[in-house]
Length: 218
Length: 91
Image (cartoon, rainbow over all chains, first blue to last red):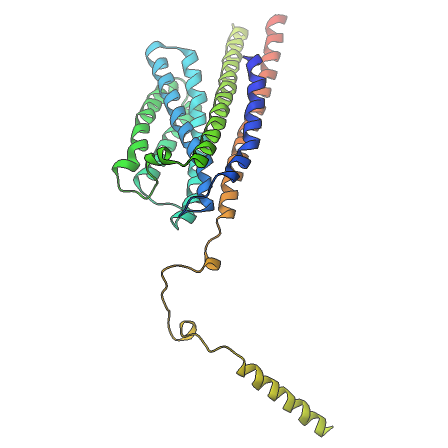
C-alpha cells in the first residue's frame, strides 16, 4: 500500500493545484455568470458524499450480517468522509445560491434532504464516539438508513418542485464545462481514495492499540 | 474693511447661486415616491467574485484541516503503538 500511497498523494496534490487554472479557463454560464464556477467543486463533493454514504452503508451491512471487524473499520472511515464532503456541499451550495437565487437557503426537497443525510451521518459518528459498548451495531443500522436515503436525495430535484438544478444538467454540459468538471471530479475521487485509505489505516492502528492493551492486562 | 467684507459676502452669495443653478433636477424617486424597476443596474448587483473565492477557499481550508487532524491522530496512535509494543516485549 505504501508504494502506491506516495505517488497517489503527489498526483492528487498536482491535480488540486491545477484545478483552479482549469476552472478559470472553463466558459461562463449564460444566466449565472461567474458564480456558476462553484459547481466544479460543489458537485464532485456531493457525488463523493453519496458514494461515501454507500461505502459506509454497505460496509455496515457486511459488519452487521458477517460480524467483520474490518468492514466496521471501513464504515467508520467512510462515515467520517460523508460528514467532511457533506459540510463542503452545505457551505458551497448557499454561497452559490446567494447570487443565483438571491437567498442563502431554501427549504426545498433537495436542500432539506441533503441536510438530513448529513445529519444522519453526523449522528452515526456521535453514536460511535459516545454510545459506549455495543453502539457499533446501532450505528451500523443508522448507516443503512442513511444509505437508503441517498437515492431519494438524488432524484428529489426531478420529482419535487425545486429551484435547484436538475440531475440532467451534467448530461447537457458544453465541451469546455464538461472537461473542467470531469477533471475536478477525478481529482476529488482520487483524494477520496487517499483519505479513505489513511482513515482506514488509523482505525486499524487503533484496533491494534486496543488489542495490545488487552494483552497487557492479561 | 467694511467694503472688503461686503465683497467677500457678495462673492460667496454669487458662487452659491451659481452652484445651486448647476445642480441636476431632483429625481422624483429620491423624495416624492419609489419607482419600481425590474432589474438592478449592473453597479448595484451583488458581486459574484467574493462568493466564488469564499467557496473555493472553504473547500481548501476544510480539506487541509481534515488532513492535518488525520495526521495528528495518526502520529499519536503510532507513538502509542510503539510504546505498547515496547511494554509487551519487555514483559
